[in-house]
Amino acid sequence: MLNIEVVSVPDIPALNLMNVNIIDETAATLAYSVFDNDGATDHGLEISLDGVAQENLQPSCIIDESGKSKECVTMLEVPVNRSQLVEVRVAIFDAEFTSEVVQYTIIDFNSTISIIVDETQDEDGFSVSITLIAAGLLGLIIMILVLLIVLRTMHNEPIDTSNSDSSFSSDVVEEELGVDLSPTGLLSRINQNK
Image (cartoon, rainbow, N blue to C red; front, side, top):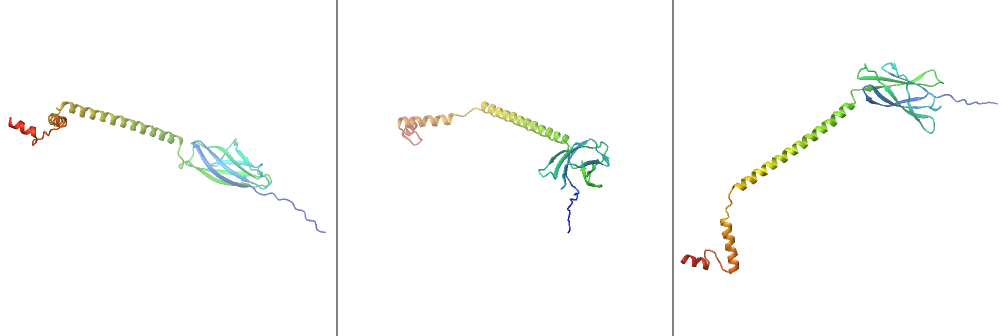
């Protein structure tokens, strides 16, 4: 008779570094995930920045329904005296193994826009708005001055109404009397004979 006993063997966990978000010059957040068929809840964590181990890490994690995978986010205190590229080393430990699972990434302070730059952009937008308002007011003042100059020149020039008044009055007379007052008309000839 042959007896076969099946014994489960622990699986090594898988670590995946998702992204690093820079908050300011001294802080960043790191998102990572851990998958372990044996359960993703009991793993030790060590994060180092440029070889300096981070202390008091308090990652916030969400474990999926199966209990085999978790996604976490943790705050990192970035060293003050550092280069523009900071190496991040993340290691997780499984009690059933003597080795650790390690992943590396970098924090690139050259590739981000700081909050101060955003405030400067807002100030630039404000100064552009003020410039546009000032230009609009200046344009309005110029238009008013041009209008005043035009009205003043019109007021100072005498208006010649002799031609329009005589033609208007002769038109009214012709209509009322039903007589042609043109130079070839009857009344014109009478006036010429006098």
